[in-house]
Image 1 (cartoon, rainbow, N blue to C red):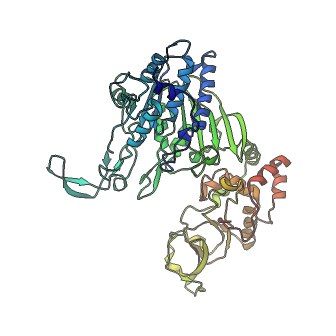
Image 2: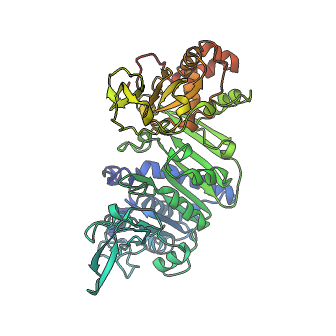
Image 3: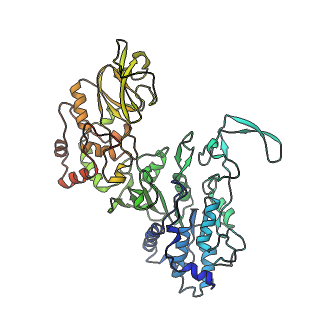
Length: 554
């Protein structure tokens, strides 16, 4: 065994992979400690499924990280196999050669990460370099593959006249979208000098054939593990980002490995652009046997902020059943609890919240959601400016509630401008701010959830800044609902369906309607729904009191 190999297999202090900076929030490097938590979970699951066998002592198990960045998963797998196979393969060099050529495989997501990953695994940026810990490869990639790929554009409507590589004139469309990942051509088609972010693992209709092309034989992997890119620019239209990790999950499941473990954003649990189908499929999949959720992503990835938190899961092909759910919040670990993931249409992260929700839903009351309008209730966008700020309405005008930045403003607008939900104009109603708190709970552990509602008098309307609850029969009804939405219990119920800052109609689904003839208090609601002292303490540890001056920025 060479000196280079000896160095690569002994402990590192400090570990360089715990020190490197992330490239972006959507391509996050996994800390070695976190990668090893996932590998420990895999070790236990493999042993339970194979009569106590140590996965790291099995020379036939194949591992794939199909979105490798720093190479941390491949490095730690190699280290564990090097130790676990000692008795079966006493010669260190032969053992390392076997592991690196037969058991450990990766697909890098960029040229830079391919070099990093090979350096982590082979101790050389080229697998067949003079400093590589193995001489078994005759090519630079080894088993960590990368080649630049292009997106496959379709649906373009605008074009330019240009030339193909052979100099022949062509008409090139410029505003298409990638049929595999949804990337915007306007954002991502940037020339040969920049990365395309066309990831090999998902840019194919036949992933099994693609893997055979990459690694030279019909490949069946026992374990797929890693941390995929989270989003892609322009995937949501314009310059907006869109989730992409769901595509990696579905592709990996399609390969039917024995086990699959991935780190993904937690926002899918209750929201996320275009994730409804993915959420339904994930929650209905009884092969998800472990789900470990971190409300604050910094508890797992200390150097990066990820809105909504992160989680990792373990998918077990051969042993469906209940999922062991663990929830991390404020340095406290809740669980594991065996749970059915599809109990609700969204995933309630904390088992204690599930118990409270059951009590509230048990009475079968009508949902408050039925009172709430959809987005842009009067057809006026947030940036609508055709009104007279701070002016009192004239006879042919009504009062308009709007926002300038974070400042609430009012003004007069011509009545005939309103074309949508005109039946709400002359009724009492409540204006419900769409912008609630953002990542406040992640930072401080408590959350206000909603900005204070506004009682809306007859002859009034609002911009997209608000939703509307109504029509209501009187000012007293509006004030009763106002008191209701300020209670901690009701804002707690809303928070269970609220993955990010904004509060839309569907997030009121678990809020029951009440008689609107009184001022509501938490004490009255706790008594009505049988909320215990411990549950009250739990709710009030998460939800801040609201007063008339509370705003989403507080």
